[in-house]
Image 1 (cartoon, helix red, strand yellow):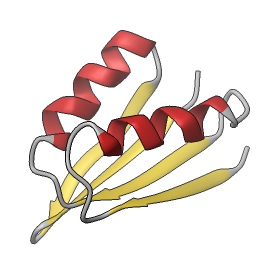
Image 2: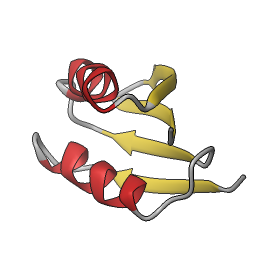
Image 3: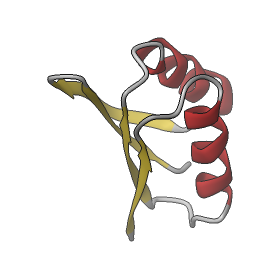
Length: 74
């Protein structure tokens, strides 16, 4: 299982989700994607995205103005 990273800092909705969707499409089942975002709306967006796509949101946290997500490709 591989870990992938996506830096979506400075991007606003819907770009972080669109870039994550593209990245996940090229990954194997079981791989994880770590995402960094500065868009506060991404917290709700990634939760809804994972619910809709069936991918697993492993973690959602923040460090100051940076929002961190880890998604498992299912």
